[in-house]
Length: 228
Image 1 (cartoon, rainbow, N blue to C red):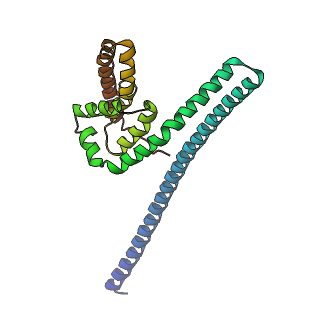
Image 2 (image 1 turned 135 degrees about the vertical axis):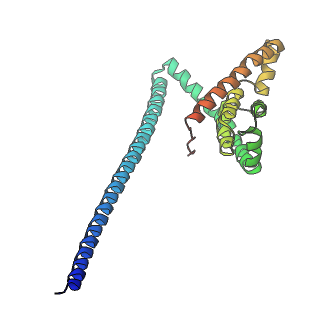
Image 3 (image 1 turned 180 degrees about the vertical axis):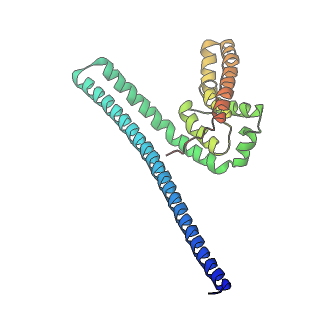
């Protein structure tokens, strides 16, 4: 065998060995990727399963609490237990009030979602609104009826349209402080001076606490969960 043939034979063997080594390396890398992907999938499934279990447990606890409460009221009515009967009457009155307020509220919120553009909310109550965003929040809260019961679903709608968190907290807080019907009722019984002093004390506290809370949540990348 000539030197040239020997060299060619050696080159072929070296190439075969190199191709086999590259193939083995590719197989090993592919197996590693599969193992990592499988581990990540198992971890994600485990996290999702834990979250689902916690949610189911929370619903079960809430349902059990409501059931115990209703049973307590029922037993109180049967044995003529006065505090339990009063709790039942309060629950009935509260339920009737909700039935009067909530249907109209959800209709108005639905119309607000359709008629008011997202650009409008972002301009007046978003990140670039500045101090005027808090002014708009207080004015909107003042014209609301139903207090925080109406304020919470409205705040969620504003959040979806781009309102800033601190402005939303101001809106919710002001809904319990400076509604126009409540203000008129208060001023007629306790006097205009008392109402003005309460506004001067309460509104700055609402705005300051809203700014602190909003900034804190934004630093921690808070995201409001989707409503269901």
